[in-house]
Amino acid sequence: MVTGMEKPYVVGMDIGGTNTVFGIVDSRGNVLATDSVKTQSYSKIEDYVEAVCAKLRPLIESFGGVEKIKGMGVGAPNGNYYNGTIEFAPNLPWKGVIPLAALFEESIGVPTALTNDANAAAIGEMTYGAARGLKDFIMITLGTGVGSGIVVNGQLVYGHDGFAGELGHVIVRRDGRPCGCGRKGCLETYCSATGVARTAREFLVARPEPSLLREIPAENIASKDVYDAAVRGDKLAQDIFEYTGRILGEALADFIAFSSPEAIVLFGGLAKSGDYIMKPIQKAIDDNILKIYEGKTKLLLSELKDADAAVLGASALGWEVRE
Image (cartoon, rainbow, N blue to C red):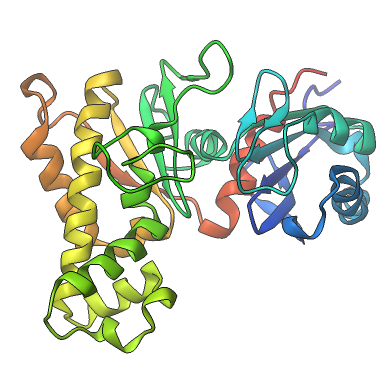
């Protein structure tokens, strides 16, 4: 009997504030089919689970049914790996503690594991991407917020409660910008896509010079607009990246002191802003790094396709679920 191959697929699911995307993945990391539902459309968790399963069941059937599925992995904001729960997620419609892994397990009939979205990305990177073969690295996801997955000695750091490694909520400016978490000056208020848009609005008010960004209503500016302006030679836009990259690099120099990672992997739209953001990040790391760590930690860009990364990362958990 060939072990493992009688169940050649896993399911990966990424629960975002806007969309929930799920797909069937094979052992080589190919996402074979995906579908999605709008997360915000379901105020009751039961309706949400039913909506996802209504679309997921036919996908599973088309690949030979649940007998062919080894497990299911879910990445979610405030996801707790130990309990399979989502707990007090600020951007999701369901409040309190939601036993999501159990709900899906019951509904689909496949063993299910759940973790937070940045941890899922780290697992994906380690299984299929830039961190293959690395035992010590830190994954930083730059999206609506800043997330992180910390791998030490080949294992994700979960802490005693399942919630370790929230580097996006390390304070980088005392009494700085208010954060959705209730604190002030968190890294995510400066270095997320949302943070970049906030910086743009601040710079446009504080500085008199002309900028392409002035053609956009201030409240509509997104980080993509800042990038487009930077590419067209806009000095103000380039300075926004410089400012953002410096703050992130200073923080990364501190994170290196914590776990001495072989690499820091950056993921998300912002990381694709190329030299505009990478150069200031690297310079700030070099300017702020403790001597013993100089030049030891590589700064890498994720090798996972944005569209697939979250699903892929979550799916990697599916191979390891205990039945």
